[in-house]
Length: 349
Image (tube, rainbow, N blue to C red; front, side, top):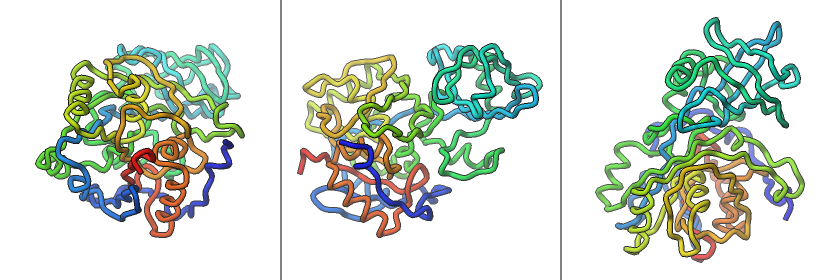
């Protein structure tokens, strides 16, 4: 298995720069025994009474900052709090250009807002210690940061204020992500009401998505790729509801790869979910035996990415190659603000 095996051609014109409105009007490719073109609004009819949606309730913070170190301009993207539960002031971040930073340097983002470089790592990663912590740090980020959109969505350096709303799911409650769980961007109150009326349940877990999700796989052997860890939580109530739904014959539907990775990180061999608080760096490649998830709702991902490898593992590489070729031919919109697909597992075919 080589990274080149997960490459494909994608016309740049298919990379969505803004979400479609209304959100449930986005297209949905149902990948089952055959391919079927649907819309997100069809989801209540594609699922069954008793199925359970597992959503990610993380909230994206304005984690991209521009500052100075002396006369040098420095751009920083936070990607993981060292202690997410207390919102401590220490964060892992990616800096550009990192070569201009040394341990002990101070980056000034505003007259009343700055951070010290505590450590330098590999690949442009630094550890920053901010002046503020907790709610004060959140407030400072809100004043001075911009939404950390992925690099394929083009914006001016100051960002687009509309992205503060667009790049946030209707489920967002727990601040800490620096990338949106993008499958959740398709949901609206109208769609949630329709799902509830159809007898389809919903439960929240939390995975604070890191900027490492944007990093391409640069090594020839994907198994040698290092995943950045992300902090997650599954409460006792959430675990009990997931286990009860499965025991009653309902299917577990992961809304996004983040929810799927968190569930698969903790699932027992029989699919039982236990409460969890901690970090996961699970990297799912073809050959992984899925234990907890029966269906996956997800957007269309980048070539050579860990997420495209994940969907190939879930639904089968040949089927996903056919699905993506169909999506390109039918002009589906790709990536974070784009359309979605509903995947049935390869084992179900």
